[in-house]
Length: 109
Length: 117
Image (cartoon, each protein chain N blue to C red):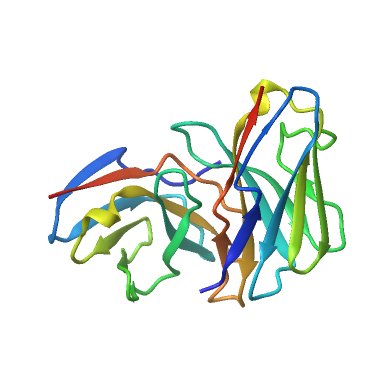
């Protein structure tokens, strides 16, 4: 079963930062936080993952709280092509992914 | 990034027939692949874990005799839906595991839409 809770939907203005929260209060010490997104009728796309430290790549930044019970995915300058369902997944490295319901992000022109 | 392909992208079949879906890792070897199913407006549901050279591990509630998984090589896993029925109509997605401990992640295929008439 999914170990994460995300808001079902969010809107963001084009060009602004999109901040997507995820609660994972039962995360264990060795579990990673992964973020993926799924555009309609496509396979999920990997965005970023992390264990304890904040992470940044060309797509996004991942901020993990010190107690690791929650995290935020930040898309710094949202575009219309970022409209998708975003999934936060908590799991041990190499283990199965159990998807929750995700957050449907709509970027508004 | 790592590329995973699926074939076919769409398939329509008659009730009672079997359908095979292929999942390939194009530029890397994958000892572990995963199969998911997704119904309209729902999240992905893990069906099984496919390990190269050994039997697949199925999630609770997934019929292993109906959904046959074969992972015969490090770049290919297949899912066969046997005696398909309309309720098996769904979007089937595979993923392949890549990497070492800190970089370990899954890359997903584009999915296969199965329609059973």
